[in-house]
Each structure stands twice: as structure tokens, then as C-alpha cells.
Length: 396
Image (tube, rainbow, N blue to C red):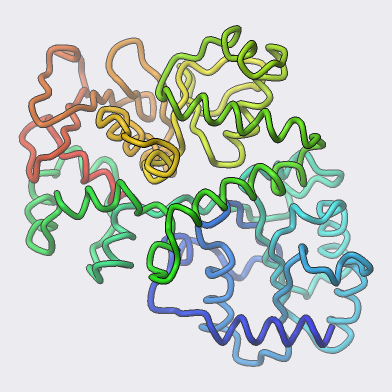
């Protein structure tokens, strides 16, 4: 355990606390068992290290570990916890829990047998808490860390601290909000920056090739993270990559399952499973008439890449209309239920209807529909029920 502690202290020394993701202030850190899910690369590890650095005064009573460490090839999590608590440990931070085969059962047992121990664990967004051997859903406080919002990008890269706002406030007060924010920064050019590279915090690391890093993240998710959760073969991983390529070449679209099955060389049921694996891992978003979460046996009505940064990483020349819709869905789904309506582009919370387009988008398609709005790109200010697209990046 001494080697693990040395690694922990070296890592803690290097972490910065000048920028913290939105979820930092939403977590009840007093809970005994916290699980933070999220796509690889969104900042889960940094989040917990920032909490340690800012709040735990006696580091001898804390420990950060990653369950993909070679130490756990010959040691158990339970054994480490026993040694840690015997020596006075009170706060344990566990990264990459999906890489540990019996994570659910052992976390449940640790929580039962060491009631004074506070545990914070992170794992893949594909992690199904209710699917484990032991039901942790009643014991753990579970949070999901989404990709960076436009508001967070402004804070991280441009040092502009702008408050988050609620959806209802955007709808009723968007003209005043737009005036306030445009006093702080020229939104249109910076919004275009965000669409290209704003979804992941590692954008601020200047000595990396950003899109190479992002493509590496995608490969790790498919090659390592998904197989750690689902029992899939190497061949299945190849098919997942082929499916992702086909999806990224034509999103958004109403999927033709038979055609995709033929191209990927698999059955209809397996193709649907592959689609939901990519969705669970945070690479794609699925939109249905009931919302973005559907049964694995049901074909989604529309498929999008998860965020616009992924579009730029996987496509040579992303379609501007698709970029707009992808951004809107990505930002809204973090806090709201988003469904595919019969009219318009998105139905939010079963209440608000949105049609997304360019600055000259008209109300023709949604004319006369209650609680319907135009979401327009490339405008600084809106009027009436026409709202700037970029403003929906301040929801978290």
C-alpha cells in the first residue's frame, strides 16, 4: 500500500483547483458512499482529487486508488480497505471501479462492514448500478458528470465567470440574459470555438494534439471500458468501431436497422445491443418519442453523436444543422427529459417544443403550437419566442 500512497500524493500535488466542474458543488460530500459516473475524459479523477486537496487536512487518513493499477492483479479491494482502516484511514477515493470484476459486491460489503469509512468511487457512464451482484442503488448517492457546458468552457479557457441559469429563466427572460452575457464576452466567435473543442477539460493542455487525444479516448472506451462492463469479444469491439464510423458518417438519422445490420454483419438484436452500448458509454445519444432512454429492444427514433467535439473528431466537415441539434440535445439532456416530437425537433420535459436552425429560421413548422420556440444559431440576441442557441449552454 505504500507504493499506492506515493502515487496518490504525486498525483495530488499536480492537480489544479482554479477550475472545478459544475458537479463539484452539487455532490453531497457527506454521504458515506458516492458513485460518480461519466464518460472517460470529462474530469472525474480531477474532481475527486480537487475535493481532497480543498477539504481533507490530514492526508494520512485519506487514500486515492485506481482499480486499473497492477497492484490489484494480486490484491483485493477488501484487503486494501482492511489494511487502510486498521491504520486509521477514514476517506477512500476509488477510480475506475468498472475495471474491477466484483466491484458491486465488494463495495456493498465494505459499506456494510466499515460504516465509518467514507467512499467516493468513479466509473464509466456505461456502469449500471442496479445490474451488479449487490443492489447499490439504495445505498449509494449516484451522480453523472456530463461533458463541459458552454458556460464551463468560458470559465476554463476565457476566465469568464458567468452564473448558470434555469431553462424556465431562459425561456421567459432570454433577452435580458443575452444582454448581460454579451457585456462579458463576444459570444458568437467563442461559441464556434466551443463547438469544435469545448466538451472536454483536457482542451486546456497545450502540449497535446487535442483530436488525437480524443480519438485515443474513444478507442480506450471501446477496447477497455465497455469490455470491462459487458462480456464482449475482440471481434465485437471491431464491430462497435465500424458501427460508430457508419453512425458518425450520417448523423442524425432515423436508423435503418436492417441496413445497418447488413453493413456491420450482425443480427438485428445484436445491432440494437451495440447501439445501446455506445450510448451507455457516452459516445452517442439516442432520441425517442418517450425520451433519450429507451429499452435495448426498441429502435431509437434518431441517433446523434454525443457532442459537437466528437463530430469534429470523427467527421471531416460536420453539417452545420447537425452541429446545432447535437449541441442542443447534449446541453439539455444533462438536466432535462428530451424527446422526439411529431412536429419540431425536440420536446423538453413534455412541455416545451423547440425548432433548431439558423438565424433566418422561421416559425412556419411550429406556428400556433403552445409553448413552442425557435432556437436560432449565429444571433447574439433573440426576441419573443426566438432564442439564441448559445444561451442553452448556461444550464449547468
